[in-house]
Image (cartoon, rainbow, N blue to C red; front, side):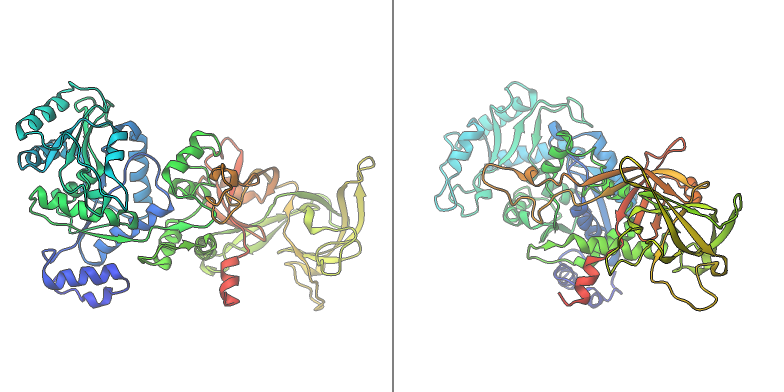
Amino acid sequence: MESLNTELLSSHFIHDIINEDLKTGKCGSKVHTRFPPEPNGYLHIGHAKSICLNFGIAAQYGGLCNLRFDDTNPSKEDVEYVDSIQEDVKWLGFDWDDRLFYASDYFEQLYAYAVQLIKDGKAYVCDLSAQEIREYRGTLTEPGKESPYRNRTVEENLDLFERMRAGEFPDGSRVLRAKIDMASPNLNLRDPVLYRIQRATHHRTGDKWCIYPMYDFAHPLSDALEGITHSICTCEFEDHRPLYDWVIEACKVECRPRQIEFARLNLSYTVMSKRKLRELVEGGYVEGWDDPRMPTISGLRRRGYTPEAIRDFCERIGVAKAVSTVDISLLEHCIREDLNKRAPRAMAVLRPLKVIIDNYPEGQVEWLEADINPEQPELGKRKIPFSRIVYIEQDDFMENPPKNFYRLAPGREIRLQHAYYVKCVDVVKDEKTGEIVELHCTYDPETRGGWSADGRKVKGTSHWVSASHAVRAEVRLYEHLFTRENPDDVKEGEDFKANLNPNSLQVLTSCLVEPSLAEAVPGDRFQFLRQGYFCADPDSRDGKMVFNRIVPLRDSWAKAQKAGK
């Protein structure tokens, strides 16, 4: 640590603070951070920013980072969330080694600290109801009013607090409050609640406790007990920092962590509230926490995002104090950049239109070559079967095309990617509906590989699959979950769900993909030529292939940057 050149780590204000603390010895010449999620839901992309920041800073300074669950509210917590959070942190590429902790590890110590506060005259048992406590607190412009129970004796408070723990009183009938200052301009210092009575089975301690510490009491003490030097959190906790420091000071703990706040991540067309995400799940608006439309890490993973792309995104958006909203197109740009380098190419026809090549020999099959990934020529080539009957996209043919349409049309010649030039010579329609059901074409055998020996050019190129070799697949096309850039922008009397996008999911069940994709396993990612990036979904099983579109190919963020917007 002494040999570290901290000047190299001055990329944002948190580095500046840590550098100064290291110079002055304020943090004992070490850096120890923590990621402290509450296990009451799945992590989302906003948590990914905090994970990258806390684990990243520890790594940059040669320090340590703990994973600690702030499990102080058993009525909303579950082992499912604990397991999912650990999976998400590891998937993102971080490891806490042997430093997995829970606030519940310290329940006895926290209780002892509370008892000491009572003995020191800094805490008291209050009988006011939750509503009365709110009414007594006052407002931003008016001081609060002291509880009539504020001046109970130390002995009475100790007795009542012990009986609270023993389960003598009903839920909500009494709380333990800090005795600070009911006239403080900071509402968080107006005798905040430290403990409440709550009969709920805890996922780790069972029914041993019926009183639980509040987050603002458990969190700073947990930091201190673990030797945390820098407690990095989002800006909504800035007003809580005086209480954080008061708890550390009043409890006389040796370690004095420093709380530093940064702006939380807000993402366009997305909600980041765990409560709102839970509402979407429990209300059946999405198909679970890992629905690929959700901003949860598990949802992004199922959709096909890579941890590298998410880490790159978190690095690009940086760390600041000012709250702002990041355009979701930047996140999509990061995954495109990553997958362009790594994703194998494949051809998939999402809305098939049959094409019969009349002059191609019946029963003949050619195996044509194409790059696995042109960005990685060392990966070599893949083989694609070609035959007399192929399928192209319905949108790649128009009977009466406008001037700027360059795909297939009657009498027009185009290139089939990696294959041949073909010309449309006939159109077959359903006699009853008039719908186009198949095309008849001819091919030029001198254009194998999709290039003409005589140098003639064609403007249009279409992807395709061989009818006799194609694999049937279901493809799920995802759009933004919300129609508004700010989903919370609603009319009076409405809530955020009024902005849900009814077209956020489109399921295509008659898709055809090239035969190599029959071997895809859940999590495999591909670039479907001209369609976008796709990922094999866990629903793929027993020969049924299911692919999620991660992002389309069109990169609106890169286009905007190029245009100087």
